[in-house]
Structure formats: structure tokens, C-alpha cells
Length: 219
Image 1 (cartoon, rainbow, N blue to C red):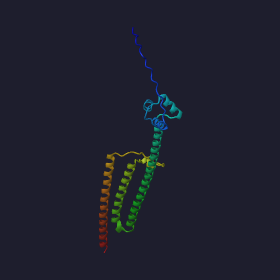
Image 2 (cartoon, rainbow, N blue to C red):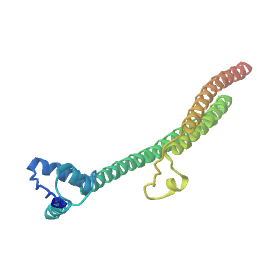
Image 3 (cartoon, one colour):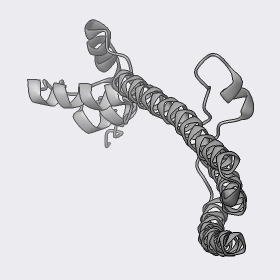
Image 4 (cartoon, rainbow, N blue to C red):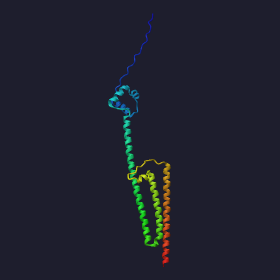
């Protein structure tokens, strides 16, 4: 009589403990602190239990993604510093624009007054003075448009220019359409300046002819 075969129950295999070297632990810590790997992924890759990993990280006070957070904080700090430096640069440009505009306006004003004084002292200079004043008036208008164009390019408003404090500048990226419009406007300004110079020369020549005629009549 044969004996019945008893089923054999397999004993669960005990997980072998793996001792990592310092270099491997450094790799584990780097992956964990960068936030690029989870506990299950690290356990599978390095053969260490999740509980063992947690104990190791807790002992070191190492949080997941801590390195990424620190790096992000450094990036934010650097970007903020760059923006502040850019704002300071724009503020300096805004002040320079205002000073340059004032200097140009004062120069045009002096030239107009000089022409008027010359005409008052010598009536024969009246026509030449009138032509010069017309040219200088057009020049002042052109300078005003250039001043407005510079302020617009920097994002400076009238409120900013009228404030006693340094203007708060809005940093923005110009679109290609805006850049093309600015270039077109600048080309128009250049063409206007050329026409204005030609008109001034023609007017000056006309004024000289008038003065010569008056002198001839005097003889």
C-alpha cells in the first residue's frame, strides 16, 4: 500500500540585506534630494527596503526635492537681482532722456531768441530770422516726437515723468509688430528731418535774396 504524497509548502525566501557603499548612498541621496526618484524606484534600483531608505533619509534630515527647492530659490533670487538691475538701468535711461530733452529744448530756445534779437537789431535780417525760426520750430516738434518715441519704447508714462520719485518701469517684451512700427516711425522721422533741412536751406537762401534786394533799393 503506497503512502499518499504530502504537498510540500515552499518557504518564503528571505530578502537579502544589501549594504551600500558610500558612493552608492551618495547617489541615492542625490536622486532623492533632487526629487527625480520615488521610494519604490530607489528600493528596486538599489536593493534597499523602503523602510531602510526612509530611516536613512530621516537620520540625515533629507527631504525629497530639497535640492530642487534650494536651486529654485537660487534661480528666483538671481532673476530678481537681474530684474532690479534692469529697472535701475531703465530708470537711469529715463532720467537721461529727460535731461537730454531739456538740453535740446533750451538750445532751440536760445537759437530762436538769438534770431529774434538779430532781427530786432537789424531789420534787414527779418526774413532770414523768420525762416530760421520756422526751421527751429519744426526741429523742436521733431525732437518732441523722438522724445515720445523713446519714452514709449521704455514703457514710461506721463505720470512716471511727472512724479518726484524714480519712475516705476514696466519691463515688457516688444512684439515683432511693435518693433516694425517703431522702425517705420523712425524712418519717417529721418525723412522728415531731411526735408526740414532742405526747407531751411531754401528759406535761408530766399531770405538772403530779399536782403540783397532791400540793399539795392537803398542805393
